[in-house]
Each structure stands twice: as C-alpha cells, then as structure tokens.
Image (cartoon, rainbow, N blue to C red; front, side, top):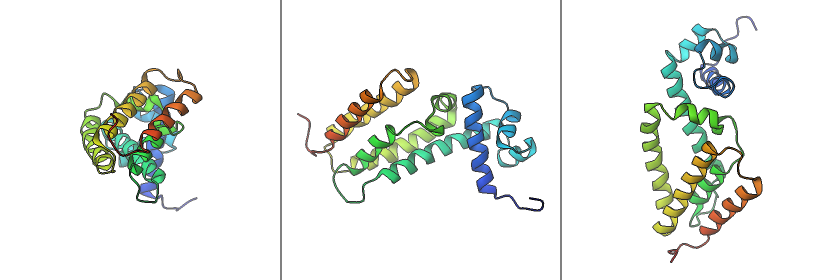
Amino acid sequence: MPGEQRNAPRTRREVLAAAARALIEQGPNVSLDAVAKEAGVSKGGLLHHFRSKQALIAGLIEEWFDHYDATVTRLLEPEDTPGRWTRAHIRATFEPQDLWSHPSVVTALLGVPELQQRMDVAATRWRQQTDSDGLHPQRADLISRALDGVTLADLLWRDQESDEERSRTRDLLLKLTEQAGPLV
C-alpha cells in the first residue's frame, strides 16, 4: 500500500528467509541481486539491513541458531524432570526438515568463520543445559555425540535413512534419558 511503513525486524526476517531459499535454489554463490529479488526488495533495501554479503551470511548464522534454540524451547517439557533439556535437543534434531535445517543452507554456512565462533558459544550453552539436566555425564555425553553424528549424517548422506530408521534412532536416544545413572 502506498505510504505504508515497513516493519524493519519483519523485513529483516523476510530477507533472511529469502536468502535461505535462494541458497537452496542457487547454491552458495548466490548473488545479493538474487536474494533481493527473492525477498521482493530492492538491492538497496537489502543493503539497508545487511551492508554486505558477509553481513547477510552472519545474519543467516544468527537466524539458524535462533531457530534451533526456539525449537528446543518449544519442545521442552514443562515439568522439572531429569533429562528434559536432553529430550528437547533430541526432538529438535529429529524435527522434520524446514527452511533453516535444509542441508543446502547449513552447507553454505560451514565455511564461514563466524559460524565456528557462534557454534562455540552455542555448544557451551547447550552443554550447560544437558550437563545440568540430571542425567549422568556419561549418558549425556553419549547422547550429545550421537546427535552430532545424526546432524552430520543429515548433511553428508541426505535421505539415505528411512523415516522408520530415523524414528528408531530418535526413540533409542529418548529411551537413554529415562534413567539418570551411568550406562555401565
């Protein structure tokens, strides 16, 4: 509508979602022009929110982590039972693929230095959540490493595992949270 003010945070999120879609469609060498077109904004409008392609990629990284954290929070059980954070992380890892977990988006972010810095911060926070979760450290560590493997397998061997196999793996990891003691 003429004269309608755009909502800057909403426009920023829309540009990030458009960038993710463009990465999926065109790969990691996608241009800012293509992102602007996908977002329905001018290149100048895109540059208003992200001054460079590197800033846009950094925004994608931030959005990627925010999305995962929001998913974990959404899946967190309300009661204060041992393993609740770990179960939320398991369920978040096995959530159906969406825009932010699409392998093309994740793969495009892997070579960006900001990703490792942000990953270190997030991994420390996630580790604190699971370490204070009431599960034996051995149990929590095994589950955490298994989730890392599931994530890596999703990137490297897309669609190689059936939904039934994924469900069995998820259920096994969830079962490991039913007891708080050591595994052996």
